[in-house]
Figure (cartoon, rainbow, N blue to C red):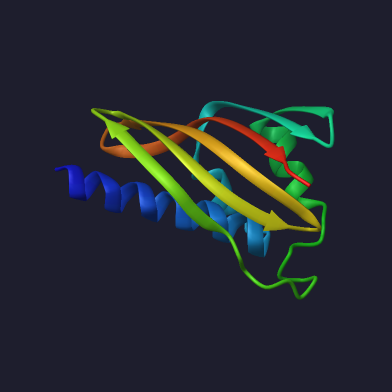
Length: 122
């Protein structure tokens, strides 16, 4: 079961990465639980958004793909215990060097992102 959960989480993160990189809002939205909250630290400035606000921002910007960026996003680590998981990601894009920490929960046999915190590191 652990290997199956790892595979499912990796698939979710692939969809998350592709949603961000290609600006695919439908794919990205399906990754999130309806009550997800997003908090970040970007060059010392607080970033706080609901999923709706975050998705609107992604929809209204040029995607990394549209800007001819090279896909460099990767999973750094996955920690699963029962029906909860923590995932650490490296998400370099749009001139930023982001690191994401995602909280996931398995609800009705489907993994969803319930919380996203991130920072930009110079």
